[in-house]
Amino acid sequence: MMVPGVLPLRAEGLGFSAGGVEIIRGIDLTLRAGGPTMVIGPNGAGKSVLLRLLHGLLRPTAGRVAWALPEEVARKRQAMVFQRPVMLRRSVLANAEYPLKLAGLDPARAVAALERVGLSALAGRPARKLSGGEQQRLALARAWAMGPEVLFLDEPTASLDPAATRQVEAIVCAIAAQGTKVVMTTHDLGQARRLAEEVVLVVAGRVNTAGRAPDFFERPPSGEAAAFLRGDLLW
Ligand SMILES: Nc1ncnc2c1ncn2[C@@H]1O[C@H](COP(=O)(O)OP(=O)(O)OP(=O)(O)O)[C@@H](O)[C@H]1O
Image (cartoon, rainbow, N blue to C red):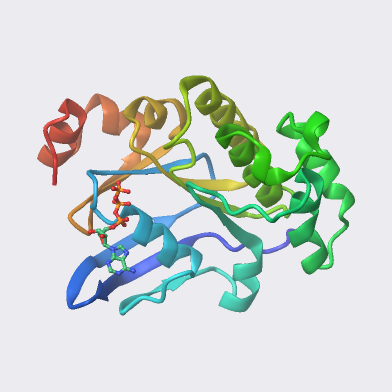
């Protein structure tokens, strides 16, 4: 019997205001199972806020986020990794084991996850002493070990050099290939081209276009999309 999944995830009239400012408004979006969805757009467009709303870290001030399963069930089957991951003052392995233990899952999954991201040799090191790229790989392993159906990644390579960026991209591809739906923001159009199956362009707090990546890049579906690809869209 097929176990019902948490997808599709729907945003319906989704809005978020803070301090009297509408940061996100009127977002209708459906995220389905499949390859990575890359959320792109100018600085300050609201990409991070959108991800936080979808993940449940922020509460919408308008509209709603609806999973295919009840929210309390769906919440446990999705995870998020941030640009600057928070590491516990413990070893690499202990960091990867921590959420598994909290969730009552087998901590041995952490060992396998570290292996998959190439960090086995550093398992005993203090996590906070790792390089930025290594910490990001650890954050991905920690999330991946939980076996999420959906993984939100908020600019996971923003402060990494090209080599560390490629390592993270390879891990993202592996996570997606194992069936986890990846929803990721990026500033890097090259990265969006490399990873995206679907592109969501956010401009000024709204979804400007959402659709298949090849179509987006080959025939930009809106004036804003064309301008963004040319590097002309600043807001
Ligand atoms: N909790 C909050 N309260 C008030 N304002 C916020 C909050 N979170 C974000 N903002 C503001 O909302 C706007 C959108 O922020 P967000 O981080 O989502 O943009 P972004 O598209 O991810 O930008 P960037 O590409 O620069 O990371 C920004 O002007 C930001 O300062």
